Amino acid sequence: MAEQLRGLADDRALLGRTSTAERVADILRSRIAEGYFPPGTRLSEDGIGGALGVSRNTLREAFRLLTHERLLVHELNRGVFVRVLTVEDVEDIYRTRRLVECAVVRGLGEPPYGLDALAEVVEEGRRAAREGDWKAVGTANIHFHRELVALAASERTDELMRSVFAELRLAFHVVDEPRKLHEPYIARNVAILQALQAGEREEAEQLLAAYLDVSLERVVEVYRRRVGEDGQGG
Image 1: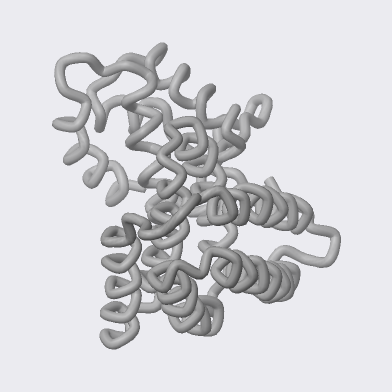
Image 2: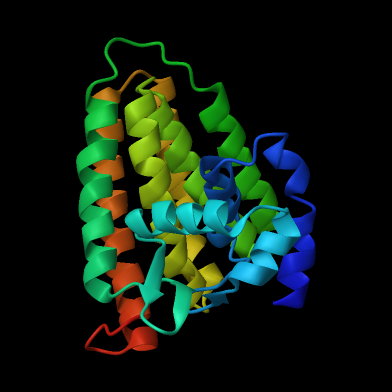
């Protein structure tokens, strides 16, 4: 925990002069998504509050916000922990992704589409794969889907999926086979991008739906082995 707290101290500048609970929650959400605080980690009020230079009340409100987003869980007389997802949680995350992401592609309208950011994260994933950094490939994968959702130009959809993608990262951090998990989707991301570049919206949606179905099956298979058949988590 000491190493994590030293890193959090570097984030104090992000708070600016107004250390609101929302800004603290943004920092902690990002750190959780990056695997800085792995699932099952107990979060120390004193340690984190001291590292960020915020009051106990502000920190508790940030914890409350992230608990509402299902990233943290409060256990009576034990404290606040980074949530360990159940298999059912993972399945529900993918149902939500399929509903939202496919609807975004379906509703794009007439081409051409603004795909520069999407193309950039595809290259980010390829570059990470060449370097053998499979966790970075996983991060690029999340960025790909975040940019895909951003094509809807909807702040509400972006906010909804920011929370969903952060939850998804909780599952990824439990899985200890990042190459097996993420490598197959580099080519699938390329195929979706190319379909959109060609203005083939229906093909892109079909590719995306198939992608999410295969990804769900693969993630659940590996995740179930790690957390147990009963899916018991924190």
